[in-house]
Image (cartoon, rainbow over all chains, first blue to last red; front, side):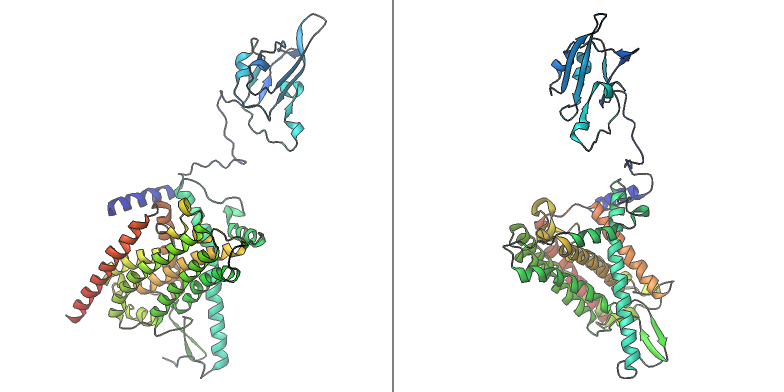
Length: 131
Length: 337
């Protein structure tokens, strides 16, 4: 019994030595998320416009129904979204939209600091998603 | 040796010296209590591979002050079904015995002021140990009262557990130090320190190792520290006897817990480690010993899980009490031979 007590005490004493802390002091030190991390969405741009062809597959695949798309055609007959909005308050970051997209026009970035002060700021419009 | 300073030979100086001693001891104990909370959070954090407080001030050093301010400005809630007088009285009843116990602990050798000897001890009671045990017994009334007056089942169970625990362990703690004053032939703490003076080998930790271990463990149980913190076992009793307390009243419970730790550490140092004896000036020696014991208390809290209630009772009555009695018998036999 005494042996176990000493064993336990020595483990805690060992952890007391410097260099055993696993804490990351967050605002000062930031962890870099992995390549496959599912953070904020990004619409992939292509020359002067977005890659998106407004096929609605992402909005259909979305289990949280957070994607709003309004489609239109430009003068050359290319279909494009006039409105492309993601409501981050509803988004569950499942990545199904990325999987569903046939032209790889949407992807997920490592951006995870998504806190905001106003409700409206959580609605990411096309312009914000293209950045 | 000059005459001892007393109320009869120089009343004004006596009162001035007394007030200085009381104030300085009180301030030092309060500071230790405040920074013990910080040290505890830091050390336990490190032991659990965390960092502990880092944000308030450099290295989080202002954390105790921030905590105190926060608790001070919190709303003070008294449950409508509580017994008001007892509810308000309980935290004070727990804190006062913890603080006044420090009064009999010698924290240094004698010094000479204006031709009079002044002992560095607030009061040298000739029944010092008895007084300390009495105050430890009184402290539990605060817990029981808090548990009962909150009118909450968790508080009540916490209070009843505290009573049962303190009764069981007070016996063993008291009996284990009987062996010490059998050797010292005095109950006065000053006398006990004198009896251990001279060589380091005169410390009672060497002649009474069993009593030392018993007193150490039982006094942890008496001040309700982990692994014997059953009165406030979070897993089953929410927060035990202080469930209903908030604001400054809660802070008083907290302070009492740490003040008790300081007192017990100082007491063990005095009884078994020669009190202020050692290589440095007296005050520093006893502070080193107190901090050492505080560290061990914190270390144990970070390491050991809480004992089960039946294990607690089993250890108190069937292990520690017989061992303490056996120790008295052995000590007696050795003294007679």
